Length: 218
Image 1 (tube, one colour):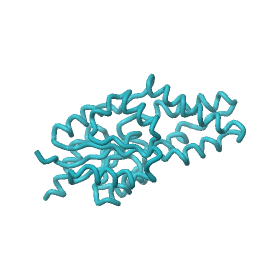
Image 2: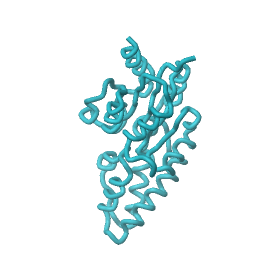
Image 3: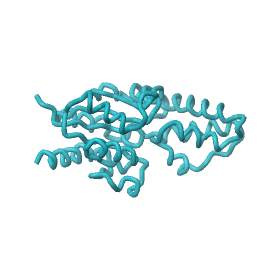
Image 4: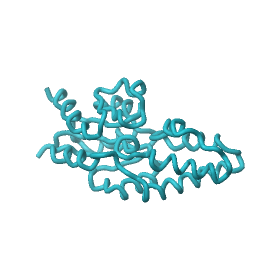
């Protein structure tokens, strides 16, 4: 049977509650060198962003002589917290199962490095949900490149990209796909204003995907 379409998901702020692991990891790492951690709001601004600027920001918070240690420790604590504190948004697995039952192929487009991505996918039971789970790692320049790779390897159309950051919207539109903003994540409505549709709860995503795909089919 011909697939109903292709849905590409961001991970942090869309399926996975990154705040439960990243903020505690940063606090623990900075406190270990005597640095007062920034506010939760300041930390949240970096969720879902590429790792290079995130690491540069983290280094800027502490003396240069301990910056490498702070970054390495924060990354290590993050992986530990994924296993113990990590949680998906409510309804995540049900929403993915519903989309698959409706005939959609599923893929991921994440800015995460490989070790973080693998830890989330495996600890949260996500890997089996996706035909093509991809992250930026060291292989892709940005999310536009990731989406381009997915579209080369999976031919189902129409395409919907679901995410909570501006680069999710940009990567969708760069390839003629729909952008569905996950407004329950970390990006503001202002950041996501160019999206084609908005979901205030992950459990609303399957119906929103169907509406977008139906509009293209007509």
